[in-house]
Length: 341
Ligand code: KG4
Ligand code: ZN
Image 1 (cartoon, rainbow, N blue to C red):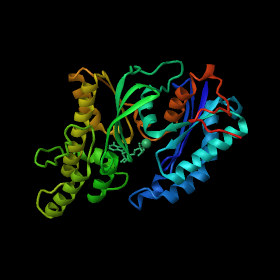
Image 2 (image 1 turned 120 degrees about the vertical axis):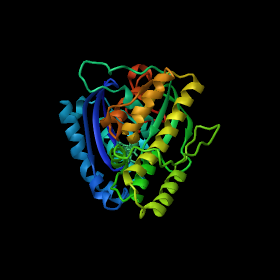
Image 3 (image 1 turned 90 degrees about the vertical axis):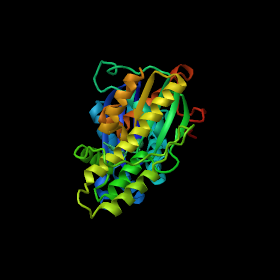
């Protein structure tokens, strides 16, 4: 089954064709990130305007790369939430129109859940993923908009265990980068810079929120701000050292809660996802801690950590199958499907 995935929840305009929920035949991502960088964050109006301009070409390219025509697509999947409302509307309207015109089923996909599904995708023809994760699992999504821990029984049962009470992990990276006068997005810059600032002198504590799987990063961000204000004119002040200490504080609490959730839930698989899962220090520390706790930790390849439509098409496939011998059609009444007149 060939599913065409469409993703427009933030600044990206993405389309992808995935075969049978696993094999990526194409993965096209256009971004308007550069246009936002001068503002230090995403401007929703600019994002959705660019998406309207780009979506047709991005979908065409995804079909071309997959070597398929629109008629050869079996179904469509689109990011339904969460995200910027104007941006989501572009993708959903486009997908609905295509589905209607082609009389092919369309399924809604949750963007956060799809980030975890990225661990089940492969880009190599004829091969299953490098090592397919086994369910049940605990999943941690850390992105620009979310920090959420889930328990997954299967691809239809994602149970939220905890989430951020204020800033998302990626948002904290972006805001701290702004405080430190670095560019946007801040995550990759801090990741790189922190490698030159390894130290034990600076320590930013992270909110523990004991007894919960929730996170809070705004206190750490404020601590960085005050540290910078009182130290930036002193000798020995070093932006890479501050970046390292901040990154360490965020990463250690993420690792602790993710491993803790696996132990509490008896899960031997830990799935990571979202832009912050690209962080090299997080990858290193999580692999270390998972190994000593005998947990199999999975990270998607870097390209699939960031927003993409392959994860939408892949998870969409699982929402589609199992419904009356796959005969889901455009008039299906199941609520998660868009219905047509
Ligand atoms: O998943 P994503 O592409 O978009 C959302 O759904 O939010 O994540 C983007 C976020 C940004 O906040 C960015 O700073 C962060 O992921 N990010 C990183 C790294 N690469 C991207 N954070 C830390 N280290 C990285 N290497
Ligand atoms: Zn995302």
